[in-house]
Amino acid sequence: MIKQIQAFFEANTFLNKSIELLISLVILYLVSRFIIKFINKVIFINSKSRNQKQLKTITGVLNSTIKFIAYFFMLVMILAFIGVDVSSIIAVAGIGSIALGFGSQALVKDVISGIFILLEDQYQVDDIVTLDGFTGRVEAINLRITTLRNTINNEVYIVPNGQIAIVTNKTKDFQKVNFTFKLSFSKDIDKLKSLAESVLAGFGHDDRIISAINCQVYYDDEMPVLKLNISCSVVNGSTISVRRDISSVMVDMFKENGFEQIMPVSVINN
Image 1 (cartoon, rainbow, N blue to C red):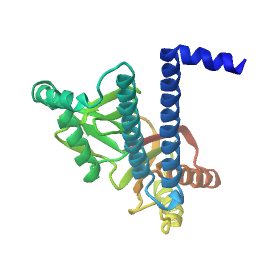
Image 2: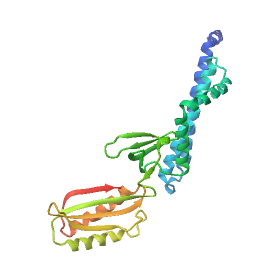
Image 3: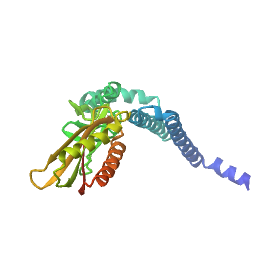
Image 4: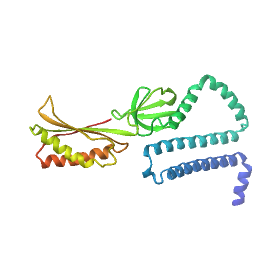
């Protein structure tokens, strides 16, 4: 039986080579996937002490680069299989360089711009930025494009790096937390402000908060309610936890001192 199988493959050279090509492509694909996972694992070792956004940016670029290299070699293997002289790719590259001057300048510009974006650390994954008139959270960066997601309507913008003339980074190195409590009307506005400032003083040594916490208490002009606004600058990635912790102690303070919260807290993150 084994001899018959061997004879079959020996008699069918094309099929034999096709199977060899398929196996080679699968091996190359699996190796590239292994390298990507290995790099991701190595980069994120002890990642708690590193900049999480920078890690996401670096791994995203490395992953896309490895995939490009793997796909390139797969293409070369397929061309060699169908009889194309692989060495002629050099000549093709020469022809491609001529075409480059006519039709691919934008691609080269995108790649070069992407390199400078990474080297200069203009923005990172999860930053809130405005690029080429589009504002959103950076979801991914690679050498050719930057992907933004509008946090309000969930739209996704694909911005070629070469089109980016001005970068407005709204969260570089820090983020802004700004939220407002609405309370039932009360004449104890001074008491409320004093209690709020006393509670906020407990966050004076919080490493997540990198600015003084601003606290304002005022009457709403349109409806008979008190508003308590709190704002501060925090370390990137800590807006949710800071807002949660401050809100928790504030709500407890309201209950203990007879202030009724009549509406859910309104939140603004800049």
